[in-house]
Image (cartoon, rainbow over all chains, first blue to last red; front, side, top):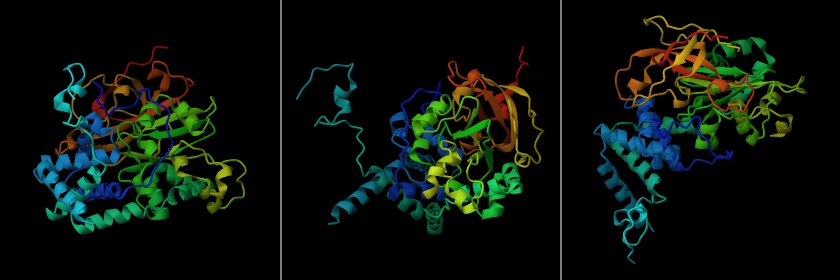
Amino acid sequence: MRKHHDFGGLPDEPITFSDHDFDPWEKMITALWVSVRSRGFSNLDEMRRLCEDLPPEVYDRGYNHARAEAMANILHERGVVSRTELAERMAILRDRIEATP
Amino acid sequence: MSHDHDHTHDVDHPVYTYADDSPRDVVETDHYPLMVEALRELLLEREIIQPRDLREALEKFDNVDHTVGPRAVAKAWLDPKFKQRLLADGRVAIRDAFQIEACEADLIVLENTPDLHNLVVCTLCSCYPRGLMGQPPDWYKSKSYRSRAVHEPRQVMSEYGTEIPDDVTVRVHDSNADMRFMVLPLRPDGTEDWSEEQLSEIVTRDCLVGIALPGLASASQ
Amino acid sequence: MSTTAPAATGMAGTEGMTVPLFAVGDRVEVARAFPPGHRRVPTYIRGRIGVIAHHTGAFPNPEESAYGLDAARVHFYRVAFKQNEIWNRYAGPAHDELFIEIQETWLHPAEEAST
């Protein structure tokens, strides 16, 4: 009855009070999300719902990882960019990177 | 290598492993950078967003003025009228004094007193006044903080190094809806003649979340 | 239990709406319900009894806007709870508190405490 993301009240391990500098992709997903939101294409509640609906192992990968997956899902749901198209573009990008000496 | 089928161990089942026995669900290290780059290209190509949206968002990410929160605290310590405005409507008070938008709905400034200590968490995700304080730190977004801050706040603060005496009430705020929160810490003793600048220097981001107390030891930072 | 509430905030989005059902100081119970779908009321607080500390305003119902629906505004309140009335084994002092924003649709009046 408790969804995976609903962590309040669970027992858990001691906290490591650390932080890390953002990788460029993390900054970019944040900026993409802000942009998508500013255009009215989606909203915060929808982003939260999509993150919450991710499989626990995916949600647990990290905050920005979950948002990237959620963004991919909302674009797929809206018929704007399918998961297949996204995977194809990722393959093209990978080839491009591997071709670069 | 062949193994007997043991249906109690999914990892041995042929569906879940590649021929080389590696688990199927490994995510390659470049997976998310590639995904995000692909998303960027496609969002721009399909004109869901415009290049200027992205430029503005990236600039905003880089240009959060992290001094505003500490300066608002220092100003509140020195100016009782500003403090009242800050407590009455944090977003408007900060906008008027510093010309920034702390958040979208309202900013509630939580005043610590000798009898009350406030701590902020978002158990459901990681709501945080990003306009004022930038991106939240990893620990704020961690499962452990989100789980434990609500039911064992004193232990969590103690792990950080903050001890709150038992005769002081600890009040935890779960930031689960449209309000955003900033803690107004207690002004430490020994700062009576300090300038606004000196005072703002001892107020760290962690003080504004409520996990830390402003300390004179951090005056040199 | 102190219930300091800022004065000027809390009127956001309330124009044209029905008056709030609850006032500061009212005793309320969070519904003990587990509907599927996107909800912003954490499980740990469901079924618990607290006191209205602050009316924060009216905002689009997140349970509807999460699905891209035109969400009606609902009143939200910050509700004050005693920690030792939320958790079975709260280890801190009896005066420790927790405040959380709950939308009106999840609240109903609670019986007065019989002490």
